[in-house]
Length: 144
Image (tube, rainbow, N blue to C red):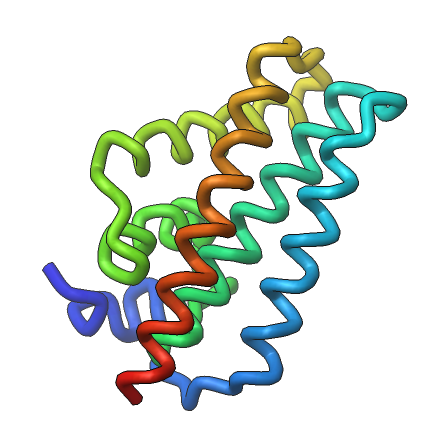
């Protein structure tokens, strides 16, 4: 399956806006820095790290000429799954990122506490993804 198969189901085509993409990457960088602040609660750190992952997935998707239809349910899941087709993460890694999405939903909607291990995993995933996404954007943009 390609991203084109998801047009009007979960995605729409857009003209990539390099300025908007750069702003998303910069926001992700700020969120990763904030997620590292140990004085914040685990829940805030996790949420901030997760937000960075979403911003990076969104930047990659937009650079590929797509955006999620936020009017449709599951746009966070679509953003995570699109990383396989955009920056080329392995399916196993996408499963880990999706588990973080599910954890974030539990935390947001039930008020559950976030364990230290989940914060650590989320932050590591965000840090790895920003390196991968920035490198991919440089290669992707140079080929355009």
